[in-house]
Length: 160
Image (cartoon, rainbow, N blue to C red; front, top):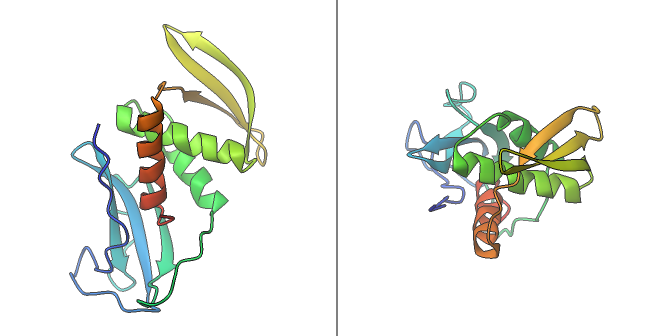
């Protein structure tokens, strides 16, 4: 699978207008032609998440000389994780698996058990905040594929 996700485009997907430093923007994560794609929107063009959006968030355009501070938004990760629940498309299963691992590491999810159903390993994870149980398919990614999906998650969420 090919994971080609662009960083913040600094251009509104609706109007084509260049987003200026300091300006608030919205981003949506969508699947286009079986790939996760990030679309950026100016504040005036944002009418809510587009149909089929997997997740969405907001931010501010950095100045050219400003360096982004790495920051993990656990709520955004959790929202993305929940929106991908029940998806069967391999790219979405892979994406959700990596997000689940990040949430485990961030202690937002807790591992309970794993089991194999019809040759597919599934982890059962519990949300620390709500107590809800979630099944996560382990797609058995190679180290290379895992690194690629992790890079995709970071790029899509703007964490480089």
